Amino acid sequence: MSLGESATPLGKVRGIGSAGDGGGHWLSERVSSIALLLLGTWLVASLLLLPNLDHGTLRAWLSEPSGAIPMALLVITAFYHGVDGMKVVVDDYVDDAGNNFAVNTLLLFLGVGGAALALFALAKTAFGGEA
Amino acid sequence: MAATHSRPLSPHLTIWRWGPHMAVSILHRATGIALTFAGLALLTWWLVAIAEGPQAYADFVTATTHPLGLVVLIGLTWAFFQKTAGGIRHLVMDSGAGFEIGRNKTFAIVTMVAPLLLTAALWAWILLGDRA
Image (cartoon, chains in turn green, yellow):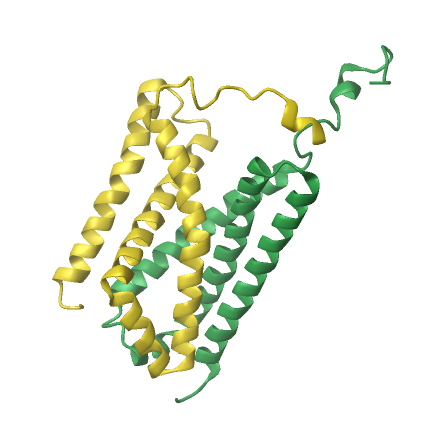
């Protein structure tokens, strides 16, 4: 290193940490996990409390705001949390900076694309009117 | 960055005796990956099938009630409960609690036993109840 003896202890270590901005990501995982705890409980409880799981029952359930809105929040939060979590796995195992960027970008696109597909389907059910 | 390949690796997997805390840790990662790919794919397929109409939904039901489909469903149910229990454990330990050796071990074991019981209870209720 060219820092020499003049560098302070902090100056010598600054910037050589693993990521630099991990704190925000860490907190983001926790907040989305708390949201998923609520939304996941809602989904399991809803599936158990519905009279049956026929197409018409589910369609009616997701046509009401009480079903469609939590489901939309669940889709968004679950995909967000999934991409967040996969980034931790990729950062652990894919060291090369170029490959790391490529894999994380691919997973981000897959996550956003999957969430868009699920939300479009949900919107179609919610706003579709009578079949 | 490029030098990482030639650096020595700490013998983190070979020198430790396996304990519940290690098992619950790797299960948290494994179930997270399974839920992200298989779980979100299934959720999306389910929502698309509902939107497409009764025929598409009937195809979804046929696939998921096939014995292999049931194995996937039950597996994902367990993964969901395991990930949820592991997540609660993480949140508790993030607060600084549960690091004492005995308590940590007990907590880790409970975190793995509870999801098995919840999965068994839920599917017993579904398969033995009047909903099947």
